[in-house]
Image (cartoon, rainbow, N blue to C red):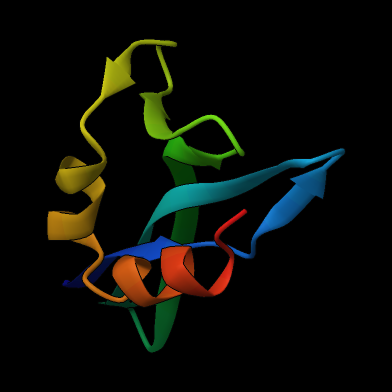
Length: 87
């Protein structure tokens, strides 16, 4: 079986004056099955980064605040994205 995992920053969403960047884990699996190949994929939201005029912060799926640096370690390109979409 071949498995690929990747954590990405999704497209920035704007709600009023607040911007939200979802952090998403994708998993793809593929394996041979008899004479063919079968595949499976899934995406799960790990949390969101919130950008507002007051602050930039991150929330995980349980609703708890986490350091933005946690997601920056998982998704290095997030830093550039946050600069681009700064409020």
